[in-house]
Length: 639
Image 1 (cartoon, rainbow, N blue to C red):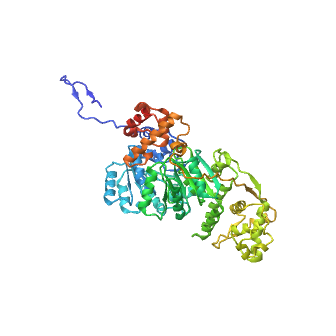
Image 2: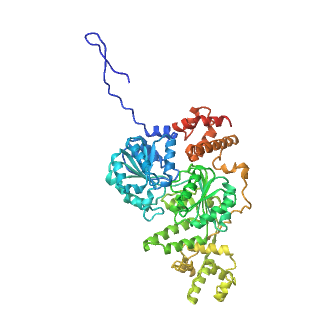
Image 3: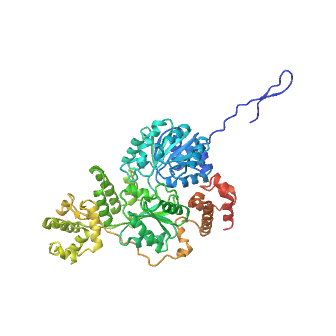
């Protein structure tokens, strides 16, 4: 700034001002930060309104689907407001990657958790106190430590962000006891704005979040739960491993994916089986040694084309944007869990698949787990309601996306991008079949005081003289052999669908036996018709191992990410992916930290020749332009 001239004195000498009051540098606006730091030209959906509310000091509860841009809703306020933004996250194993991603954008970030040495924690605390951090990530359990609260008292905290806020719900699918102490944020630092964020919350869970976190005065922002880029598909379970291999080889060869299994043993078996088919797959479950889990997670995040086979212990907060498919080999316990897990696919908004194989044994197993679970009758009833909703999604004749969205309180039109929209299922009148099955259950109970599982019931109906049938003399029942019009799989579908509508129940004896319910009697008396869904046949299973050049040297494996590109643009996209992989490995960071697939697609279409043209591509901020700009232009020029 130029000093101010003072008029000449009577002696004719000109005098310069000795002191000046500096004009403060204006704080960057939210849009400035979005463009310069993150490389995006405009906000999406309600982001701008949410950010403006929090920057202004207001509390907020944000429900936004995975991949919808939730993180920006607290990252930008933390960069605009004075002080350090404190992020409460349950994801200790991922904090390092979250901080690495922020640093790649030029954001000063650090974390405090139990994985650090005392010296490392001390260095982070000193950086925060010196004003050298924009974001500080904390595990929720640290708020119970006196040293942490003392540190926060000494800091100028810009905002508190509570990520994965549904973890505070005690009856939810991801309950974390440490989240219950987060009410201390309001009590101890009442003037600091708080923003709680989650991708999955029914109206009941939302109310619980508000109550437990003391957010009664917070403004609620509920974005659409729709993820239109995800194709939802559910197949009858016949040969689930073979069905999964067929899906991967036919549609996702070489893509990153997540396969969820209910048990640790199933995780190990599935990962080994996929490896035997030439698919690079790694296991992840709580029974593995911590170093193995950490190494497998790190490899999944950093390398392209890894399939992670896991229990639900894996996945929350995974920032990897290019997961092209999520598969379930076992039935999730609730739509919340299913939506949370499938939402890890296609975070970059490019096409992705949510696939599940679902069968009768899944229903029986989960019904048994509920019966044997801890908790009172109300808790078991709630678990049963969650499972009923999940079964309704599996058996629906209507658009699957509509069912999911309606569960979260959102109305929608048929999506045209799920299996029931693309290939509408056929219905058939299953009243007589249901009566035959229920009648067999009744006769076994009344005449012999016996209960059996689905396999024995089907053998009776189909007239199979098995050793077990002969042992119990079930061939003498009047219903023996009256169901030969349906094959074994069709009868299993009847049992499964009656269970899903509570016209049949799994008994509490722990053996998976079946019994009738109050809902059974109107069916038996002919007072209620039963419409059943005709199972579609699963895709043909491809034989043989996947070869290294399947799909033309791997070009098919990039079909989803590169969809819509011209041939020469696809060549550039592949060159950019190769460069990104080498760059990420050299830096020891996940590939997406360099650039996302969506940004590489944008570069491939734009073919920038200058840094200025490259900076106009979505996802290329100032720091990434400085770090990678020249190298990217070299790749573009050489392809």
